[in-house]
Amino acid sequence: MLDQVLPQLTLTNLIVNLIYTLVISVCVRFVLKVFKKVPEGHGYWFAVPALTFTVIVLLGQFTHPVASLPNLRFQIQSRYAEAETVETSPRKQLSIASMVVEIANTGEPTSLSGFGLVIELPNQPTPVIGDRMTIPMSGYGLPVGSQVEWLCGADALDLKTIDPIPRGGRRIGRVLFQFPNITTATLLSGKATFLALDSWGKAWSVPLTNNTGTVVEVRNVPGFHANATQGLPQPQGEQNNPIAANKPTTSQCAP
Image (cartoon, rainbow, N blue to C red; front, side, top):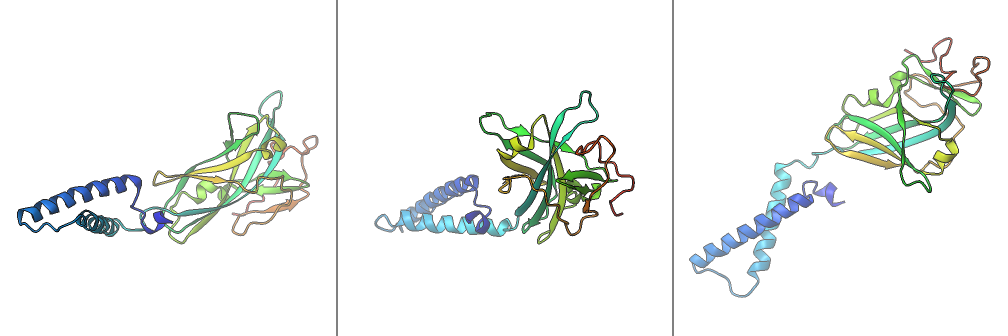
């Protein structure tokens, strides 16, 4: 709460302001002593430093505008799918985390990058880190339950946040992470955290509160170039394999 009202009052600034207060208070007392105007009692050492500190803090707010940093709010929906790689032989099992991330900004404009997904698994000291997957511009078909969720490269979160998010603005985009040799059940048993870095150098860490089960319902997202398609035909022998079945005969991604 305090950092929203007085955003410049960081720990470093607080220490510097206290030093300034002490120096100014001593100097003022010295001047008063020279002119033989030193007040009696100990009230001076309470009143003058308090007044001095208040003035310094308020001046700091005027010289450094309140809205000097981004203020981001994240809403994240995630779902998981299991797959096999087709680039390697023998094929390897992997899990894919598909995320829809909505970001609202009430502070200074900022772009975003450095997206990551870290999951702390039970009885494992080292967390697992997801590998970012590129969403093809032509489209990617990710089976979710009995349906296929179409992902378009134009909806990728990194593309949506290249341009700064203005004050009062919002962005919504998709991001994919893969976890080789880990089942979705294992991932869902852990604590997931979404990571992002703004252009001001601040790292954002967002716990995923809905990481409690596989979401099989495919829902349309307003503003995306493509959404769900039921019963998409898959190549013979490649059923339930999103890596092999991600190339549609006709693109589902609107231009």
